[in-house]
Length: 382
Image 1 (cartoon, one colour):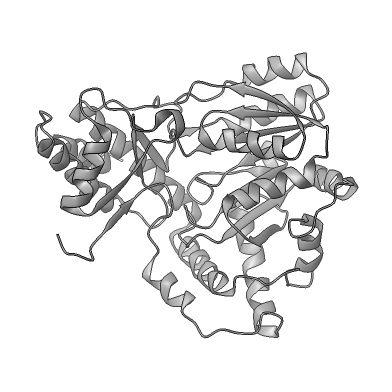
Image 2: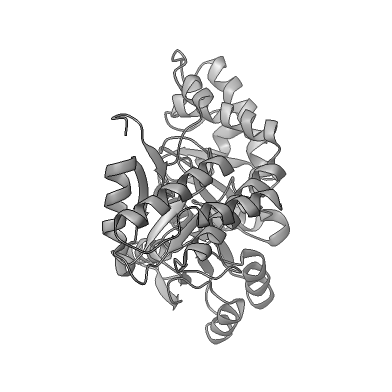
Protein backbone atom coordinates (compact mmCIF):
# COMPACT_ATOMS: atom_id res chain seq x y z
CA UNK A 1 0.00 0.00 0.00
CA UNK A 2 1.21 3.49 -0.82
CA UNK A 3 1.56 5.60 2.30
CA UNK A 4 -0.63 8.44 1.08
CA UNK A 5 -3.16 6.36 -0.86
CA UNK A 6 -6.43 6.12 1.03
CA UNK A 7 -9.83 4.87 -0.06
CA UNK A 8 -12.56 6.68 1.87
CA UNK A 9 -15.77 4.65 1.86
CA UNK A 10 -17.66 6.02 4.81
CA UNK A 11 -21.02 7.86 4.83
CA UNK A 12 -19.37 11.23 5.28
CA UNK A 13 -17.09 12.95 4.87
CA UNK A 14 -16.86 11.66 1.34
CA UNK A 15 -14.26 12.04 -1.44
CA UNK A 16 -14.02 15.47 -3.06
CA UNK A 17 -13.79 15.80 -6.86
CA UNK A 18 -10.46 17.29 -8.03
CA UNK A 19 -12.25 20.10 -9.87
CA UNK A 20 -14.05 21.01 -6.64
CA UNK A 21 -10.76 21.04 -4.75
CA UNK A 22 -9.32 23.38 -7.35
CA UNK A 23 -12.37 25.62 -7.16
CA UNK A 24 -11.98 25.92 -3.38
CA UNK A 25 -8.37 27.06 -3.88
CA UNK A 26 -9.43 30.20 -5.70
CA UNK A 27 -8.10 33.53 -4.50
CA UNK A 28 -10.19 34.90 -1.64
CA UNK A 29 -12.64 37.71 -2.34
CA UNK A 30 -14.47 40.21 -0.15
CA UNK A 31 -17.55 38.59 1.32
CA UNK A 32 -19.62 41.76 0.99
CA UNK A 33 -18.44 42.70 -2.49
CA UNK A 34 -20.13 42.26 -5.85
CA UNK A 35 -18.17 39.09 -6.63
CA UNK A 36 -19.63 37.36 -3.58
CA UNK A 37 -23.12 38.57 -4.49
CA UNK A 38 -22.68 37.18 -8.00
CA UNK A 39 -21.55 33.85 -6.58
CA UNK A 40 -24.56 33.54 -4.28
CA UNK A 41 -26.91 34.70 -7.03
CA UNK A 42 -25.53 31.96 -9.29
CA UNK A 43 -25.90 29.26 -6.63
CA UNK A 44 -29.41 30.12 -5.36
CA UNK A 45 -31.65 28.73 -8.13
CA UNK A 46 -29.48 25.67 -8.74
CA UNK A 47 -29.99 24.19 -5.27
CA UNK A 48 -33.76 24.09 -5.66
CA UNK A 49 -34.02 21.06 -8.03
CA UNK A 50 -31.85 18.98 -5.70
CA UNK A 51 -34.32 19.60 -2.86
CA UNK A 52 -37.33 19.42 -5.15
CA UNK A 53 -38.63 22.81 -4.12
CA UNK A 54 -39.47 26.20 -5.52
CA UNK A 55 -38.44 27.76 -2.21
CA UNK A 56 -35.05 29.30 -1.59
CA UNK A 57 -32.51 27.09 0.15
CA UNK A 58 -30.72 28.83 3.02
CA UNK A 59 -26.97 28.19 3.15
CA UNK A 60 -25.54 28.45 6.66
CA UNK A 61 -21.92 28.10 7.76
CA UNK A 62 -22.15 25.16 10.14
CA UNK A 63 -22.36 21.38 10.36
CA UNK A 64 -25.37 19.23 9.57
CA UNK A 65 -26.22 19.24 13.27
CA UNK A 66 -26.37 23.04 13.10
CA UNK A 67 -29.04 22.56 10.43
CA UNK A 68 -31.03 20.24 12.69
CA UNK A 69 -30.81 22.74 15.55
CA UNK A 70 -31.79 25.55 13.17
CA UNK A 71 -34.97 23.68 12.32
CA UNK A 72 -35.85 23.07 15.95
CA UNK A 73 -35.36 26.64 17.18
CA UNK A 74 -37.25 28.15 14.26
CA UNK A 75 -40.38 25.99 14.09
CA UNK A 76 -40.96 25.22 17.78
CA UNK A 77 -41.15 27.17 21.02
CA UNK A 78 -40.82 26.07 24.67
CA UNK A 79 -43.44 23.58 25.83
CA UNK A 80 -44.62 22.76 22.30
CA UNK A 81 -45.48 19.11 21.89
CA UNK A 82 -43.36 17.52 19.18
CA UNK A 83 -42.86 13.98 17.89
CA UNK A 84 -39.46 12.54 17.01
CA UNK A 85 -39.21 9.35 14.97
CA UNK A 86 -36.05 7.54 16.05
CA UNK A 87 -34.77 4.91 13.62
CA UNK A 88 -31.13 5.31 14.63
CA UNK A 89 -28.47 7.59 16.03
CA UNK A 90 -29.48 10.72 14.14
CA UNK A 91 -33.15 10.42 15.00
CA UNK A 92 -31.88 10.23 18.56
CA UNK A 93 -29.94 13.45 17.95
CA UNK A 94 -33.17 15.23 17.03
CA UNK A 95 -34.55 14.02 20.38
CA UNK A 96 -31.61 15.50 22.28
CA UNK A 97 -31.91 18.85 20.50
CA UNK A 98 -35.65 19.04 21.17
CA UNK A 99 -35.17 18.22 24.85
CA UNK A 100 -32.38 20.80 25.14
CA UNK A 101 -34.84 23.44 23.94
CA UNK A 102 -37.47 22.41 26.51
CA UNK A 103 -39.97 20.90 24.10
CA UNK A 104 -42.46 18.26 25.23
CA UNK A 105 -40.85 15.52 23.23
CA UNK A 106 -42.76 12.39 22.24
CA UNK A 107 -40.74 9.56 20.71
CA UNK A 108 -41.51 6.67 18.39
CA UNK A 109 -38.65 4.21 18.80
CA UNK A 110 -38.19 1.92 15.81
CA UNK A 111 -35.79 -1.07 15.96
CA UNK A 112 -32.47 0.04 14.47
CA UNK A 113 -32.19 -1.39 10.98
CA UNK A 114 -35.88 -0.95 10.22
CA UNK A 115 -37.78 1.94 8.64
CA UNK A 116 -40.71 3.55 10.39
CA UNK A 117 -44.12 2.52 9.10
CA UNK A 118 -46.45 5.44 8.32
CA UNK A 119 -49.15 3.61 10.26
CA UNK A 120 -47.08 3.99 13.43
CA UNK A 121 -47.07 7.76 13.00
CA UNK A 122 -50.75 7.75 12.11
CA UNK A 123 -51.65 5.93 15.32
CA UNK A 124 -49.49 8.21 17.43
CA UNK A 125 -50.91 11.42 15.98
CA UNK A 126 -54.43 10.20 16.62
CA UNK A 127 -53.53 9.67 20.27
CA UNK A 128 -51.70 13.01 20.60
CA UNK A 129 -53.56 15.66 18.58
CA UNK A 130 -51.59 18.56 20.16
CA UNK A 131 -48.33 17.67 18.40
CA UNK A 132 -47.10 20.67 16.42
CA UNK A 133 -44.00 19.29 14.71
CA UNK A 134 -42.92 15.83 13.54
CA UNK A 135 -39.16 15.30 13.20
CA UNK A 136 -37.72 12.38 11.26
CA UNK A 137 -34.71 11.33 9.22
CA UNK A 138 -34.74 10.60 5.49
CA UNK A 139 -31.65 8.41 5.38
CA UNK A 140 -30.68 7.21 8.84
CA UNK A 141 -26.90 7.24 8.45
CA UNK A 142 -26.24 4.93 11.37
CA UNK A 143 -28.30 2.05 9.95
CA UNK A 144 -28.49 2.60 6.19
CA UNK A 145 -32.30 2.88 6.29
CA UNK A 146 -34.25 5.17 3.95
CA UNK A 147 -37.52 6.20 5.58
CA UNK A 148 -40.66 6.60 3.39
CA UNK A 149 -40.87 10.40 3.54
CA UNK A 150 -43.60 10.78 0.92
CA UNK A 151 -45.92 8.45 2.82
CA UNK A 152 -45.00 9.97 6.19
CA UNK A 153 -45.81 13.45 4.90
CA UNK A 154 -49.17 12.27 3.62
CA UNK A 155 -50.11 10.83 7.03
CA UNK A 156 -48.91 13.88 8.97
CA UNK A 157 -50.87 16.34 6.87
CA UNK A 158 -54.03 14.23 6.67
CA UNK A 159 -54.27 13.88 10.43
CA UNK A 160 -52.86 17.12 11.82
CA UNK A 161 -51.68 20.68 11.34
CA UNK A 162 -48.19 19.64 12.40
CA UNK A 163 -45.14 20.58 10.39
CA UNK A 164 -42.90 17.81 9.03
CA UNK A 165 -39.17 18.41 9.49
CA UNK A 166 -36.81 16.02 7.70
CA UNK A 167 -33.10 15.41 8.25
CA UNK A 168 -31.78 14.68 4.76
CA UNK A 169 -28.12 15.15 5.66
CA UNK A 170 -26.85 11.81 4.37
CA UNK A 171 -28.91 11.52 1.20
CA UNK A 172 -29.92 14.86 -0.36
CA UNK A 173 -27.98 15.13 -3.60
CA UNK A 174 -28.01 11.36 -4.06
CA UNK A 175 -31.69 10.44 -3.93
CA UNK A 176 -34.89 11.79 -5.42
CA UNK A 177 -36.38 14.51 -3.26
CA UNK A 178 -39.70 16.20 -4.00
CA UNK A 179 -40.05 18.47 -1.03
CA UNK A 180 -42.94 20.56 -2.35
CA UNK A 181 -44.85 17.70 -3.97
CA UNK A 182 -44.57 15.42 -0.94
CA UNK A 183 -45.39 18.13 1.60
CA UNK A 184 -42.13 18.31 3.54
CA UNK A 185 -42.09 21.55 5.54
CA UNK A 186 -38.41 21.79 6.44
CA UNK A 187 -35.64 19.82 4.71
CA UNK A 188 -32.03 19.89 5.86
CA UNK A 189 -28.75 18.60 4.50
CA UNK A 190 -25.02 19.07 4.94
CA UNK A 191 -22.12 19.66 2.60
CA UNK A 192 -19.88 16.66 3.36
CA UNK A 193 -22.10 13.83 2.11
CA UNK A 194 -23.68 13.49 -1.34
CA UNK A 195 -22.85 17.14 -2.12
CA UNK A 196 -19.14 16.26 -2.37
CA UNK A 197 -17.72 19.08 -0.22
CA UNK A 198 -15.84 19.26 3.07
CA UNK A 199 -17.92 19.69 6.20
CA UNK A 200 -18.87 23.26 7.01
CA UNK A 201 -22.13 24.11 5.24
CA UNK A 202 -25.68 23.21 6.17
CA UNK A 203 -28.65 23.80 3.89
CA UNK A 204 -32.21 24.44 5.05
CA UNK A 205 -35.33 24.87 2.92
CA UNK A 206 -38.76 25.69 4.33
CA UNK A 207 -42.30 25.54 2.94
CA UNK A 208 -44.78 28.43 2.97
CA UNK A 209 -46.52 26.75 5.92
CA UNK A 210 -43.25 26.56 7.79
CA UNK A 211 -42.33 30.17 7.04
CA UNK A 212 -45.61 31.33 8.59
CA UNK A 213 -44.76 29.46 11.80
CA UNK A 214 -41.14 30.66 11.74
CA UNK A 215 -42.10 34.31 11.42
CA UNK A 216 -44.69 34.11 14.21
CA UNK A 217 -42.39 32.19 16.58
CA UNK A 218 -41.48 34.41 19.57
CA UNK A 219 -38.52 32.26 20.60
CA UNK A 220 -35.32 34.35 20.76
CA UNK A 221 -32.65 33.24 18.28
CA UNK A 222 -29.70 34.94 16.65
CA UNK A 223 -27.18 33.11 14.45
CA UNK A 224 -29.67 30.39 13.55
CA UNK A 225 -32.56 32.74 12.78
CA UNK A 226 -33.86 31.59 9.40
CA UNK A 227 -35.70 34.86 8.81
CA UNK A 228 -32.36 36.68 8.84
CA UNK A 229 -31.01 34.34 6.17
CA UNK A 230 -34.14 34.70 4.06
CA UNK A 231 -34.02 38.49 4.24
CA UNK A 232 -30.34 38.68 3.31
CA UNK A 233 -30.73 36.12 0.53
CA UNK A 234 -33.03 38.55 -1.26
CA UNK A 235 -29.94 40.76 -1.49
CA UNK A 236 -27.76 37.79 -2.60
CA UNK A 237 -25.98 37.94 0.71
CA UNK A 238 -25.84 36.31 4.14
CA UNK A 239 -26.42 37.81 7.60
CA UNK A 240 -23.05 36.57 8.83
CA UNK A 241 -19.68 35.78 7.26
CA UNK A 242 -20.15 33.12 4.56
CA UNK A 243 -17.72 30.22 4.08
CA UNK A 244 -16.58 31.54 0.71
CA UNK A 245 -14.15 28.76 -0.18
CA UNK A 246 -16.92 26.21 0.34
CA UNK A 247 -19.24 28.32 -1.81
CA UNK A 248 -16.63 28.30 -4.58
CA UNK A 249 -16.63 24.53 -4.28
CA UNK A 250 -20.43 24.36 -4.17
CA UNK A 251 -20.64 26.27 -7.44
CA UNK A 252 -18.47 23.61 -9.08
CA UNK A 253 -20.41 20.77 -7.42
CA UNK A 254 -23.56 22.13 -9.03
CA UNK A 255 -21.74 22.26 -12.36
CA UNK A 256 -20.87 18.57 -12.02
CA UNK A 257 -24.41 17.59 -11.02
CA UNK A 258 -25.88 19.53 -13.93
CA UNK A 259 -23.36 18.04 -16.35
CA UNK A 260 -24.26 14.50 -15.30
CA UNK A 261 -27.97 15.32 -14.96
CA UNK A 262 -29.59 15.00 -11.55
CA UNK A 263 -31.78 12.09 -12.64
CA UNK A 264 -28.61 10.25 -13.67
CA UNK A 265 -27.02 11.07 -10.30
CA UNK A 266 -29.98 9.42 -8.60
CA UNK A 267 -29.73 6.36 -10.88
CA UNK A 268 -25.99 6.05 -10.17
CA UNK A 269 -26.60 5.95 -6.44
CA UNK A 270 -29.33 3.34 -6.82
CA UNK A 271 -27.00 1.26 -9.00
CA UNK A 272 -24.17 1.43 -6.46
CA UNK A 273 -26.56 0.35 -3.70
CA UNK A 274 -27.72 -2.66 -5.70
CA UNK A 275 -24.15 -3.64 -6.63
CA UNK A 276 -23.04 -3.48 -3.00
CA UNK A 277 -26.00 -5.42 -1.64
CA UNK A 278 -25.78 -8.12 -4.32
CA UNK A 279 -22.09 -8.59 -3.58
CA UNK A 280 -22.72 -8.97 0.15
CA UNK A 281 -25.46 -11.52 -0.46
CA UNK A 282 -23.19 -13.51 -2.79
CA UNK A 283 -20.49 -13.57 -0.11
CA UNK A 284 -22.92 -14.64 2.60
CA UNK A 285 -22.39 -11.44 4.58
CA UNK A 286 -25.65 -10.42 6.34
CA UNK A 287 -27.13 -7.00 5.64
CA UNK A 288 -28.71 -4.96 8.43
CA UNK A 289 -31.60 -3.59 6.37
CA UNK A 290 -34.11 -5.04 3.93
CA UNK A 291 -33.91 -4.37 0.20
CA UNK A 292 -37.13 -2.35 0.43
CA UNK A 293 -35.81 0.06 3.07
CA UNK A 294 -32.14 0.26 2.05
CA UNK A 295 -30.58 3.65 1.35
CA UNK A 296 -28.86 4.35 -1.98
CA UNK A 297 -26.08 6.22 -0.14
CA UNK A 298 -24.90 3.85 2.62
CA UNK A 299 -25.04 0.10 3.22
CA UNK A 300 -24.90 -1.36 6.74
CA UNK A 301 -23.57 -4.89 7.23
CA UNK A 302 -24.06 -6.98 10.38
CA UNK A 303 -21.55 -9.85 10.48
CA UNK A 304 -22.65 -13.12 11.96
CA UNK A 305 -19.38 -15.03 12.00
CA UNK A 306 -16.57 -12.49 12.12
CA UNK A 307 -15.61 -9.44 14.14
CA UNK A 308 -16.53 -6.21 12.36
CA UNK A 309 -13.87 -4.15 14.15
CA UNK A 310 -11.11 -6.64 13.35
CA UNK A 311 -12.24 -6.59 9.74
CA UNK A 312 -12.26 -2.78 9.54
CA UNK A 313 -8.81 -2.61 11.10
CA UNK A 314 -7.46 -5.19 8.65
CA UNK A 315 -8.67 -3.47 5.47
CA UNK A 316 -7.51 -0.11 6.77
CA UNK A 317 -4.00 -1.28 7.61
CA UNK A 318 -3.41 -3.45 4.56
CA UNK A 319 -5.30 -1.65 1.83
CA UNK A 320 -5.95 1.88 3.09
CA UNK A 321 -9.71 1.24 2.90
CA UNK A 322 -11.68 3.20 5.49
CA UNK A 323 -15.11 1.83 6.39
CA UNK A 324 -17.41 3.16 9.09
CA UNK A 325 -18.27 1.30 12.26
CA UNK A 326 -21.50 1.19 14.21
CA UNK A 327 -22.79 3.92 16.51
CA UNK A 328 -24.30 3.73 20.00
CA UNK A 329 -26.12 0.38 20.41
CA UNK A 330 -24.63 -0.89 17.13
CA UNK A 331 -21.04 -0.03 18.04
CA UNK A 332 -18.84 -3.05 17.35
CA UNK A 333 -21.74 -4.94 15.78
CA UNK A 334 -21.86 -3.56 12.24
CA UNK A 335 -19.77 -1.82 9.64
CA UNK A 336 -20.99 0.58 6.97
CA UNK A 337 -19.95 1.24 3.39
CA UNK A 338 -20.56 4.72 2.05
CA UNK A 339 -21.31 5.01 -1.67
CA UNK A 340 -22.41 8.57 -2.25
CA UNK A 341 -21.29 11.75 -3.93
CA UNK A 342 -18.01 11.46 -5.83
CA UNK A 343 -18.23 7.68 -6.02
CA UNK A 344 -18.80 5.50 -9.07
CA UNK A 345 -19.58 1.86 -9.89
CA UNK A 346 -15.84 1.42 -10.48
CA UNK A 347 -15.21 2.46 -6.89
CA UNK A 348 -17.79 -0.06 -5.71
CA UNK A 349 -16.08 -2.86 -7.62
CA UNK A 350 -12.76 -1.93 -6.03
CA UNK A 351 -14.34 -1.76 -2.57
CA UNK A 352 -15.98 -5.19 -2.97
CA UNK A 353 -12.67 -6.68 -4.10
CA UNK A 354 -10.91 -5.29 -1.02
CA UNK A 355 -13.79 -6.47 1.15
CA UNK A 356 -13.25 -10.00 -0.15
CA UNK A 357 -9.52 -9.79 0.54
CA UNK A 358 -10.15 -8.47 4.03
CA UNK A 359 -12.56 -11.32 4.80
CA UNK A 360 -9.97 -13.81 3.56
CA UNK A 361 -7.26 -12.20 5.73
CA UNK A 362 -9.30 -12.51 8.92
CA UNK A 363 -10.03 -16.17 8.23
CA UNK A 364 -13.57 -16.13 6.94
CA UNK A 365 -14.25 -18.75 4.30
CA UNK A 366 -14.97 -16.79 1.15
CA UNK A 367 -14.82 -17.54 -2.55
CA UNK A 368 -12.66 -14.77 -3.95
CA UNK A 369 -14.29 -12.99 -6.86
CA UNK A 370 -17.81 -14.11 -6.05
CA UNK A 371 -18.88 -10.74 -4.66
CA UNK A 372 -17.21 -8.83 -7.47
CA UNK A 373 -18.93 -11.07 -10.03
CA UNK A 374 -22.32 -10.41 -8.41
CA UNK A 375 -21.70 -6.65 -8.49
CA UNK A 376 -20.52 -6.85 -12.09
CA UNK A 377 -23.69 -8.70 -13.07
CA UNK A 378 -25.84 -5.95 -11.55
CA UNK A 379 -23.87 -3.33 -13.45
CA UNK A 380 -24.04 -5.19 -16.77
CA UNK A 381 -27.77 -5.91 -16.41
CA UNK A 382 -28.81 -2.39 -15.39
